[in-house]
Amino acid sequence: MGFIETVFEKLRRHPKRIVFPDGETELVIRAAEKFYQRDLGIPILLGRRHIIEHIASTHGIDLDHVAIINPATSSELPAFCNRLERIERYRQGGLKNSTEVMMRPAYFGAMMIQYGLADAMAGGINSAGGSLLRPMLHLVKPLPFADVISSCSVVQLPSKQFGDDGVLFFADTGIVPDPTIQQLATIAVQAGLFARQVFGKRPRIAMLSFSTKGSARTPSTEKVAGAVDLARHIAQKANAEITIEGEMQADAALDPAIAQLKLGTTHVGGKANVLVFPDLNSGNIAVKLVHLLAGAKTYGQILMGFTRPAADISRGCSVDDVVAIASLVGLQAIEYRKLYPPEEG
Image (cartoon, rainbow, N blue to C red; front, side, top):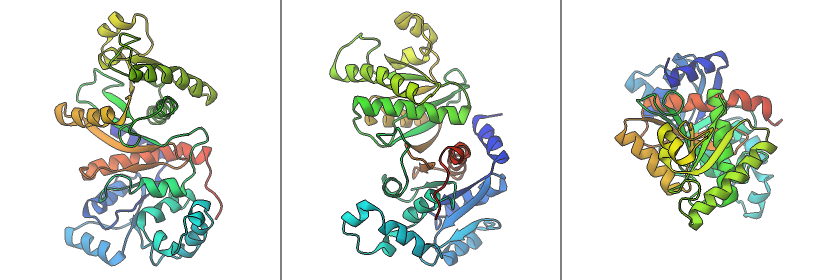
C-alpha cells in the first residue's frame, strides 16, 4: 500500500468535513466528488450554487453528498460578522464592513473551522500565495507554543531508499523568508509533530546547512547550529517524541555512508525523514527540484502553527493532488479535535 493510500485508509475510519473555498473551480469540484467517493468524508464547496451546479452539469460531475454553501446567503453570515467585529485587530484597524469581509470564501472557511462547522480547510488554488494564510492568521487561534506560522510539504519519492519508504517532510517551503534562530527551531518542532501525526513514527529531523558540525563557520551555519539546541528544548517542553540533529549537509542527512564519514555515530544522519531548511529560498527550491527532476509527488503547503488544520494548495495541483492534500489535513483533524475542541458559538 502506497503512502497516500495509507492516509486514505486512516481517514476512512474517521471521516472529516473539509471546506474548499475555491468551490467555483472545476478542478476543485472534481476533487470534492472524488473525496466523497473514496469515503473520506463530506466535502463542503463555498460559492454560488447555480455556478457550481452549472459547472458540475457541464462536465458530468456528481454532486451527490457534496455540500454547497454560498457565504453571501448563509444563515451563519450574521453570526460570523458579529464574531469578526469582536476581534481586537479588526476594531483597531477601522473595520467598516464586516459583511464584505466575511462573504470572501477564505474568510468564511476560516471561521467555519475555528467554530467547528468544518474540520479542516484546503484552498488557495486560484490565488497568489497568502490568500488563505491571511484569514487563517486573523481568525484561527495559533498553537500554544507557536511563535511563528510556517508550512510543510510532504514529498513522496519514486525510490524508497530515503526517508520512510521514500516519504520525506520538507519545512519551511512556503512562508518564512529568513527565519530567526527561534523561528527555525519552532519550524523544526512543528514539522516533526506533523510528521508524527501523519506517520505515527518517531520523526528524525535534520537541520540542514552547507556545513556539517562546524565544517564551515558563517552567521548562517551558526544560526542553524543554535536552532538545533533550541528546538530540542522546545520539543522537550512540548513532550514531543522527536529526534533533532544538525547542522548537517543534505548528503549527510540522507546517505548512511556519508553520514558515518561526516558525523560518526548518529541517530538522524543517513536516515532523516524530516528536512528543515535554513531559509525559504532553499526549502522552496528543493521541493520544486525533487518534483521536476526526481519525479517526486509533492503535497503541500500544509500550514503549521494553527489549532485548526489547513493547506494552501498550489495552482499547479491535479485533482488527485487536491484529494491527497485534503486527506492530509483531514488526518490532522482527527487529533486536533481532541487537543483543541471547537469554540462554542
